[in-house]
Image (cartoon, rainbow, N blue to C red):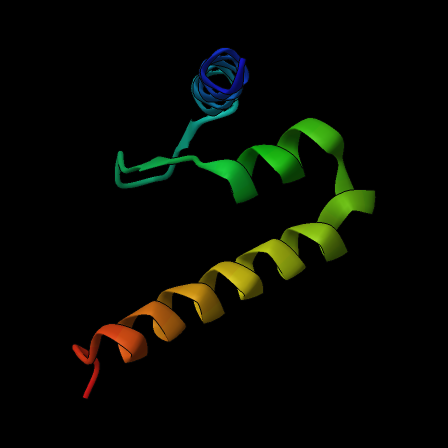
Length: 71
């Protein structure tokens, strides 16, 4: 049951990432969860988008500190 919901979540994230990805002036592709939350759900979700980005940043630095690879 957990695998089914995990696969459904991964499919939905992949679908949204492809649907809402954009290219900048230099041809680089921009996408990902914070990008499609803003484009797909609108400007009223910007605070949630910023919170998600901040929590992801803290998580990444926290995991690096726990592993001892961040100096």
